Amino acid sequence: MASTEGKRETYAKMSFSKVNPMYLQKVERKGRTKDELHEVITWLTGFNDEKIQRLVTSKASFENVFETAALNPKAHLITGVICGYRVEDIADDLIQKIRYLDKLVDELAKGKKWRRYSAARLRRHIGLVPYLFPTSGQRLAPVRAFAPIRN
Image (tube, rainbow, N blue to C red):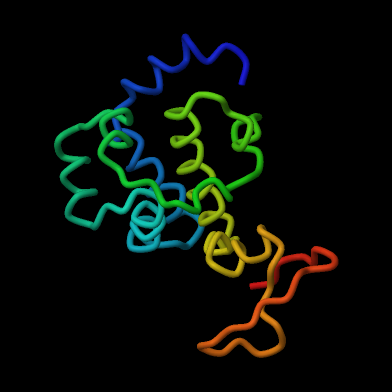
């Protein structure tokens, strides 16, 4: 991302309590619910509904939000373009985390399956898929060609 130094301060001081209602408005316009939005935020940050509400009422900045968040270890699998930038190519950690959230909210609003970053996606990402029918003692076989992910 070109010249993030000036933008970092802007993003760091941006209030989560001002952006969260915009996220909610966006998803509700597309027929989604507050619970689904909170599920996305919880997946990425590890925060429960109470913690999300406290962050909104305390007017926490995005910097504070992501300093206290336990970012999902699969967050690096979030890829794509948001606001003209490829999420995976953003150099600044804070801006990248904010864009991860933007991307997940965008996918939720568009009706895409944001859960594609789940274990199935991870197995495909590292080149392994369940062999035939998965069981509790799952056998994994190498992937010869990457197929589109269908959820």
